[in-house]
Each structure stands twice: as structure tokens, then as C-alpha cells.
Image (cartoon, rainbow, N blue to C red):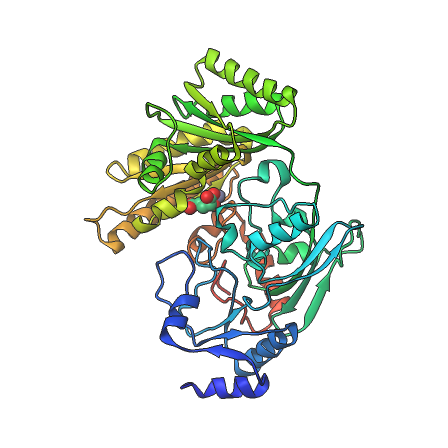
Length: 462
Ligand code: 2HG
Ligand code: ZN
């Protein structure tokens, strides 16, 4: 242990588990973005809320910045520690603490992986409905810090809908408890909601009381092949009018190309320009009949060219893999990512403009479009060509993102729908939030984190 500050940390928090090996610094100092070289001071792995508090108090006394760390699956650099910060990993605080059958709530520690939350809910015959591909690696605390969305937002909303109570260690080390599991609580500011999506800039989520619901209905999965972008929203409306959608996701032929190369099975004989994978309630014949009616209507209109319905759970998973495998299949190309949203009603016009802009801006780049079309949320991944330098690639992508941010501003959209602002989207925050709002954000940060030590430099600069 080289840095003398770490001796004082161990003195302030005897028994604290610390990691300082170069491999650990590298592992814990980055998230799924690969732009910044990790360079944390050390990794603290507290085993209790008291230890989290002790670490944060020590950080205040020694003016050391702290980067809270969950599963580090983020895509905006929110968990990057590249400036000598102390990484505070919640991975040891990973247990379910309490289940309340009457309230239908599950209280968990922040480091619990999302998938473990799903399993715990299922053991009680219920479900925690927020879900996405990184479920096995991400943590519930990170989900809360970014207000994570995912593939079932269309039906269940974002993470913030599902948090009934929150315990947070604020930037000064104080333990705060918000809302305490209440459904109704009209007693002033809702700090719980302020914490959700604050990306670790106000404090560290240590515990959450999550709402659970009835187990999901029996569902089927349908894969649709579409001729053009233009018909996407018509297909969405045709399906949404007729059935209870659990998910409605889109992707392009480029996505299929990459996920197939990465092992996913493609069910059609031909390829098509665009695809939708939708999951819908199909507990009885009526559900299935509605799905077929929507499908036939879309075929008659020429909006859909082909389709396949899952005949088994295994086939449903195969179809899902075409969509859920995209991020992993693209990772080796170190893509530049955009994660934008507009109101659903604005989607057709926004899509047309975005497509014209992106198509013209990157004529020679492989651009992969996909996302949660039913939520008005698009993911645009630009793959780095081998013969283009990192700096040139980034420069070009940032230039195009600036233009895209201007389009989003006109559409009253968001530069980050569900991945957070972190470091990656910080330069574009003002396209989504006006100056008065950003000034208020700074004031809120000062209130919870007077010395500005919680995840500094993320979302905005002080
Ligand atoms: C998804 O929807 C995730 O699969 C990741 O939000 C999106 O990799 C991305 O750009
Ligand atoms: Zn997504």
C-alpha cells in the first residue's frame, strides 16, 4: 500500500477491504465505455452501511473524490475513475434484506445484481419488472443511479416507478432515508426521486425498497421484417391498438449482420432492412388472435414483409437474442453510442431528420440503429473503422452528435434517454436541460455534497 492516505483510511475505517493491485485498479476504474484510462487511487469494498459512511466521512476530511461503483455496465462513463478518485464498490452489499408480502416490496442492498433481484421476486411468486440485457452484471444501485430503462419500459416504466424507499449516504457521510416504502406521501419534496438518475453525484445509494407486481402474463414473441423506417410507427400503432405489449423493439439489418456473426440464429430465408421484436400477452386464444390480426393488417398494408412467432420458450429466447445480443456483438468495434429520445408522437418526423443527418454524416461508417421504439428511444451505434484513428473517429462522432443535439433540441427530446449523461454526454447536456435547470442542479449538488466529492465531473462541471 503506497499512498499514505490509505493508511489514514484504514485508521478511520478499521477492517475495510481495500484493493490496490494494478489489475484491480484497471478493472474497477472503468465501465463499458473504453475511452478513459482507469487511474483510481484505490478500491474500497465496504461490508456495511456504516463502513460506507466512514469512507465518505474520511473522503470529506481528506478531500478525496469518490466514484460509486455498481456493476460498471454503464455506457456513458458514469463509473469511470480516471483522476485518482477512490472507487467505492457496493459489490459486497449484495443481499436481499426483507420481503413484505402485504406491501409487495423487496428491500435489497445496492450491490445486488438485477438478475438476483428478479430471482428473489420470483421466489415469492412476484416479479420486479425492469429488465434489460445487462441484467446479470449490472447492480440495482447502478440502475437506480441512472434511472435505468430497458426492454419493458413500454409496459412498466423506468426504474423510478419501482422504488418505494431509498437509503442513501449523502456526500457529507450522513445516512438519509427517503419515503420508507410508502405508496402515498404528500409531505414535501420527494428526495427519493431526486436521487434516482443522479448518477452518484449527490450520494451513494446503499439500500432500496422495491415494488413488486404479479408475475408476468404468459407471453409470446414475434419477429417482424419491415421494408422501411417510415412504416415503423404504423406497425407499432397497429400492434399497440390490438394487444397488451410487453416489449416492442426495433433493429436494422446491420444489427442482424453483427449478432448473427456473434452466434445468434436468424430465422428467415432472406434478409430485410428493418426488424421488430415484440413480446405480448398471450395467455388465451384472444391474445394470440389479436396478434395475428395485427400481423395480417400490417402485411396487407405492406408494412410488414415477413414474420415468425415463437413456438416455445427456447425459440422466444432465440428471437430475443437477435435484439439483446446487439451491444455485446458490437463491443469489439468500440462503437460511439447515442441514446436519444423524443415523444412517441414526434418519432416519425425525428427519425426522418436523424436518418438524413446520420446517413449524410457517416457515408462510409457502419452505423447500427436499434432501440426501444415504443418509448421513443433510439440507440445509434457508429462502429470505428479500422483505418480511422481513435482521435479522428471521436472528433467526427462528436461533431455529428452536436448536430444531432441541435435536432433533439428542436424536437424537445433528450440527449440521454436511459444511459445517463456521465462523461460522454456532458458536452451536450444543454441541448436537453436549459441554463436555469442546470444552475438548479448545481445548487442541489451543493446541498447534498458540499465539498463536491461525489462522482465529480460527471453530468456537469461545478
Ligand atoms: C440496449 O437497449 C442498451 O440494448 C444498450 O440500452 C444500447 O449498446 C447500446 O447502445
Ligand atoms: Zn436500451
